[in-house]
Structure formats: structure tokens, C-alpha cells
Amino acid sequence: MLDLLLRIAAFLGGAFLVVTIILSAIRSFVLPRNESVLVNNWVFMAIRYLFSFLAARHRTYAARDRVMALYAPVALVMLPIAWLILLSLGYTGIYWALGEGSLSVSYLLSSSSLLTLGSVEASSFIISVFTHSEATFGLLLITLLISYLPTMYQAFTRRELVVARVELRCGTNRTATELILWLNRTGSLADDGPQWKIWEEWFVEIEETHTSLPILSFFRSPQPGRSWITTADLILETAAVVISTVEQQRDPDMELCFKAGCVAVNRVSRYFQDRAQAEPAEAISSEDPIEDPTRRDFFRTYDQLREEGVSLRPDREEAWHKYQELRSRYSEAARFMARLVMAPELKSIGGNQS
Image 1: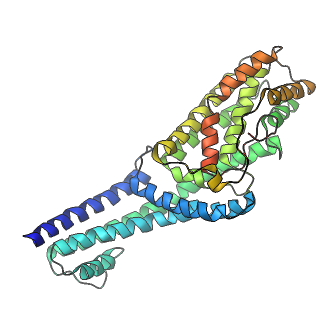
Image 2 (image 1 turned 45 degrees about the vertical axis):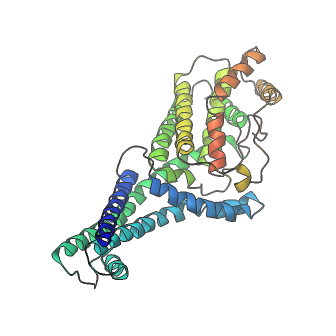
Image 3 (image 1 turned 90 degrees about the horizontal axis):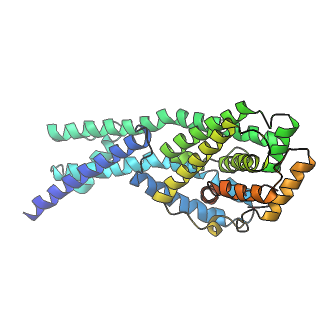
């Protein structure tokens, strides 16, 4: 009686594990929405702890960046391996419950059938059905990942194209002040609708791809000084300063871009905050604590823009309070994501660390 109960439990447990893994793959790569997959979270977090430990042993950001650059590719490769291991264990329980033999014999049959029908022959028609289903599911898991790799790298390429273009416009300092001065020098500060539309589309795509395929958030830029989250923060800082400080007619394209950016950064941040606990910043970075820009930073930027001939609102205090209100819509989310993905330092409007 006890043996029968054990076999029933093994069959049900194995079947549950198989269904869970198949649904995990479907929810990860087929379902067009941001779903939290527990198995994926465990795999990514376990590998993240390992890479964070290795990165923390290096003192410079460049060295830590080289270590963390491997995290996302390794985690993505390890994910189907974890799926296949769990799938094999699930079918091992099923074979043992159906009386195929000992656990070791059942495991050999399962591992032989996982990716193709192997050399171990099934003892009955029912077992043959399960071995064929295991071979089918094993190939399906590998095919899903391979088929989605081009999609992921296309999204990565489109993301990095905007990152590189923004850096060209604002220089190596990568501050909102520099980007505004570039827009002013090119005569496009008051009328740069196409540029804000491009950035709006970029934010919309970030929101969709980095929540439906969250591992994309951890793919690092080809250049160690770049990051998608620092670029997002830079564009939002630029829009916040222009909206609050520059004297000009309302620009609906810029306002839509700012709204899209706030939505994207907050939703990506909320996805990880709701599903995983971020590591303390000191565990992955030895940089100084992030600080918000002060009134003096803002007024320094205000004076610099005025010296460059940018038409500004006369009331600096009112502009400062408006800027603070706008910045509060995205700063916490950007700060969280920068720590989570170990991005380069976020810079304030005047170039100080923030």
C-alpha cells in the first residue's frame, strides 16, 4: 500500500514538474506580456549572486563591468539547461511510478529520451508514449530559446543604437546640460519634434521588451561607459530641465516623450521590485552613495544655460520647484535600476554624481 502511494505521488509530482517547465517556457518566450516565472527567477537570481560575488572582488568599475558583462549571456544559456534538468527529473518520477525499474534505471531512460530517442528501449507502449513526449518537449525547449535569440538581439541592437546616438550628442560628460546646449547650438531646442519622437518610440520599446524579456535589462552595452538606464535618465533629465526652465512654447512631442520615459522606467523597475529583491549597492559597487541634485547644482545649470544664450524662465525658484516635481516621477525608479544592473554612475544636470 505504501509503495502504491509513493508511486502515485511520484507520478503526480513528475507530471506537475513537466507541466510547470513547459508552461514556464511558454510564458517566457511565447506569451506576449510580462509574466513572472518562478523557475526563471530562481535560475537568474542564483547566477546573479555568483556574478555579484565575483564582481565585488574587483575595485574598479571597469573590472566589475567585464565580469558582469557575462552575467546575462551565461544566465540565458543556463536557463534551458535548468529546464531540461528539471524536465528529466519529472519524467524520471513518471517512469519509476509506472514500474519501469529503479530510480537509476528510470533516470537513464529519461536522460536517453530527453533530446532524442536514445538507446534505452521502453518496456511497454505507455512508456514509449512518455519517452516520445519527453523527446518532443526537450527539442521544443531548445527550439524556443534558439528562435527567440535573434529577436532578443534585434531589440538589444535597436536599444544600443539610441544609446550611442545620445552619447554623440552630449559628449563624454553625458549630462542634461550638455545635451541641452547641443540642442541649442544646432537650433533644434525649440523645434526638435523628430528627435523627441524617436526617443518616445525608444521608451515604448524599452517598456515592452524589458518586461516581457526581462533578461534584456542586464545585457550591457558594448562600451563599458554606456548603459541604457543612464541614457534613459539623461533623456528624462533633459526633458525635465527644458520643461521647467526653458522659456518656449509647449512641445507636445517632448512632453509625450517624457511621459513615455517615466512610464517605461517605472514599469521596468516595478517588475523587478515586485518579483526580486535588489541587492544592496555596496555588494556590487563601491561608488559613493547616489545623491539628488541640489539647488546649487540646478542654479549652476540655470546660469550656464543663460550664458549660452538659452531663453530661460525669469523665476529661478519656480523653475527649481517645477524641476523637482518632474524629477520625482522617475528618479527613484532610475536609481533602483542603475543599482540593479550595475550601470555607470548617474550624473546630475551639472555633471556631479547623482
